[in-house]
Image (cartoon, rainbow, N blue to C red; front, side, top):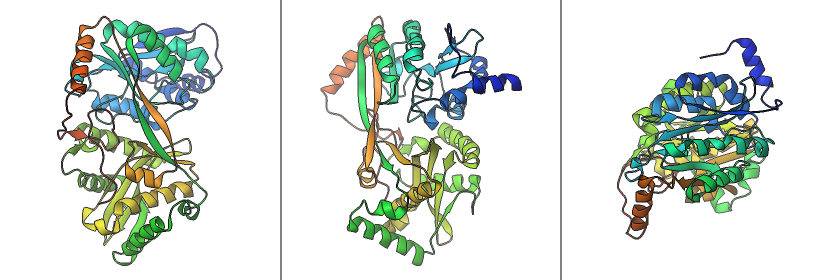
Length: 408
């Protein structure tokens, strides 16, 4: 459902300036969801802590491909003419975790499951959080009878919405607070690759240079980007094979059927728009490494990578990160974000970081919530066991498998 042109023009200019009485609406159907499209990214553009994972394309494609049994419950603050001023992208769903699957969870739209978002938040214009967010958070009180618990994953600790979210959870839910804190490392990008190299030891520099020299001289190596020598469809097809090589003991959630359809569609939209980047490495006439990520507000978010394991001696995983960092510097980006998961290779590359929070609260009237909390208490006293499952390299939530390092 699309609005005509004059309505679109109004959406682009109104949300930041309208005042007056606002009403809270809960969108529960797809028609209402799609009616928000003209306003969605306009509001995202005004956020203090926006990310690619809250944009319309990500949310709408996730809903089409990955929603399973989820139900829309999107909170919308509207002015007296019905124009959205702030949006709470929410859904009711059950987590895939064997224990949590019995709970009806109120969570961010695309908050878990295949192709889940890695940086989520309420969509509120910067500077208006103290005015709008408490009103928008009333949606949690309204929806409390419909859920067993609330779980809001991957909220940036510095988000201006965080104190308001915590306040409403503590007011309306029991045992509310921060469930997990995940450190998210990033690189503050300098003006040149040479400037970046000086931050590292001579040993680090020499190993990387040696691998790059072998890549170039012994394997006729070439660094390109998608669209230069390979089409998006060709690169994605080869990338899937390279990525799968890294997961001998499990299946990456990135290439499950639903997630792969999602990313094929997203890449087809975002790569031509330069909202996504895919640096590639070719050696001996074939693709041997690729990295896939997203661009938002002078930041690059490294999402997934893959490389040819037979070339492990020259560390193609490290070389493709090196090329991706260089591409970001050339483009004038300021931050290279490696997303959640505090792994050794991220410590080697990154010089800074920030915290992501998972917030949680339980419906005090829910017997399922009470049973889950009792069971969780028992499980925490028992030894943990790991089982192979569909896993995501960027997913470090409880019960999930960690990622391997980016080289053999």
